Image 1 (spheres, each protein chain N blue to C red):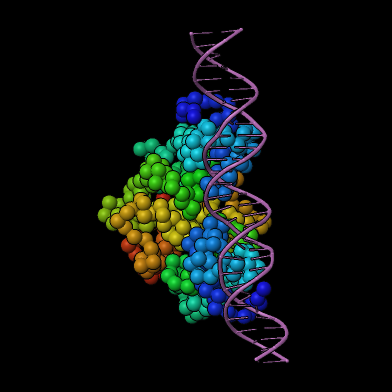
Image 2 (cartoon, rainbow over the protein chains, first blue to last red):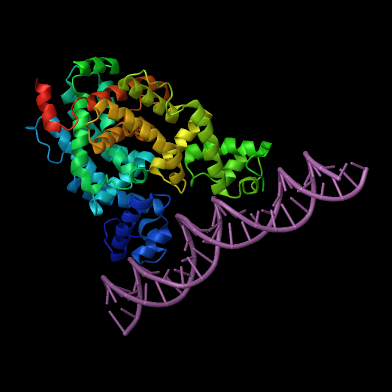
Length: 222
Length: 222
DNA sequence: TAATATTTCAAACAATTGTTTGAAACAAAT
DNA sequence: ATTTGTTTCAAACAATTGTTTGAAATATTA
């Protein structure tokens, strides 16, 4: 078996094809036969170069994690001179781009998004190395907007509300296209979606830190 | 092969067990062998009573759709005397309960939630018979809160923001438990989650119909 | 009760999965 | 050029999938 470092032609072809197919189909639905056929290599190549299918998946994750991290760093475009509100806007755009964009760097985002709902044995690694740092940054931004006195639990709930919105447009695409065949909520609408989610969420975070819905009602009547 | 109507002991046992297993594992990961073993029936029973695995899945969907519709009607607890804000609160609670509750009636919600991210050939049926009516009701409530002058596109985006939040707590449970091992965002927190999502969303809908995030910022500084 | 229809069962079937094999082809080093 | 190590390949392997079979058991009907 080959080492991790060596970059043979076959190895690259497999990583390339497997990245796309895993992102499209998920771990269990993607078959080694399909990957090898599309990569134009022999069936035995995966086991020779990566040990087994798990080894391939892990290599693919590591490979594209690196690329994705360079293309869309978690703090992409965020600097300390920005207001928390601007940071949130930047974060949401970066998040949406990462999971909806096209081409190689987005495959990792796609893989990660899939692990959210169809977790495999690799989820622990992903949470540790990618999801936790990214979510940590979000909770800091949200915490700054809500203010220091806000309970940690509330900060987390609000952060989840934001992530939930972002993931929905990616995950539920099959449903959305059936609900509204004419309309489109995809890659080309990232700007629109970013502005909508940011606006919706900033208002959601606005002043009503611990208020329940009935108090908000009063607020509206004002 | 048996008819749909007849309710043999074996048939019931299969529907019962298959409902649970399909909800837990999804269509493709659930195996007929596993279902039959846990139901205590012979391997051939599924093909005998339902034709094939697809036929079983369809029967399970139809069966629990009926039960779920009775237990959690889409307009559960909603009446025309309520304010739209109250209606939204009721809707969100009903939605969360449907997908997070325990026991038979919730299996259908679980199956439906799964189809959102792992669509099977059955998605078209589900969109037509369940998802579209439910989403239609939500957009009406959201439309009433936003006001008649609001663009349909905005109503839809806001409705999706609400559904996205609800589904997140269900879908991403594996990630959430890894992020916060001590905390819990599940069945027992339905009340808390309902209040949070309703509050967050009502504020999100509040007055800022077409405002982008920078205008919200100004609003906050007031 | 006897005849008929229905349901259950163990066994096998065909297709697909990930994986292994051992020889052949290729490359690198002596 | 010969040896040595590495990579590729067609073929087969073992395990799992959904499905079918045909006889046995059970229930229903005459």
